[in-house]
Image (cartoon, rainbow, N blue to C red):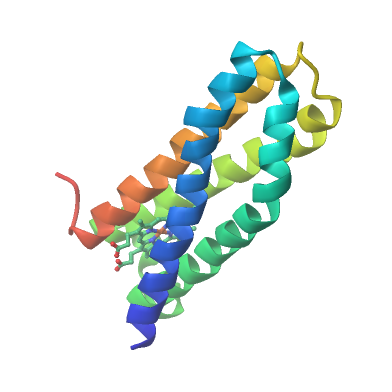
Length: 148
Ligand code: HEM
């Protein structure tokens, strides 16, 4: 029962994190770029930031918990003997990449966001969104017993 609940929470968190970033990248960002208007992104971020970060935290907690269930005590996890540990390790790398991009944007780009720095933020948004989609692809790969 716990395992099923964790998978449901993990999937729900994925809809928020990946769905939210797809909305940002596909609908809000093009309009902001077209009108050279960073405020459109600010407005979206204001509403999404807390919810989005909570969902990323939920993904991390439920993801690590699921990993613990698959590899109790994380034993054999780092031996990379199965597609499962390889996919989970890829997800952990995606998490590091996401955190690096998000922290860089939060502390170095967003505070001085202007029409001139909009392009830089656009690259970050596209990067985080791509990683968010890859999270889903890898996660579904785990459920399907591998993607090949
Ligand atoms: C934003 C980040 C993440 C997203 C969007 C995401 C998305 C997903 C999705 C869509 C699934 C498939 C669920 C299913 O069909 O059963 C999944 C499964 C899984 N994810 Fe994640 N994930 C994220 C982060 C993580 C992290 C950080 C870890 C672990 C370190 C992790 C570990 C797992 C595991 C072990 C499964 C397999 C669960 C099962 O048996 O179905 N995920 N993930």
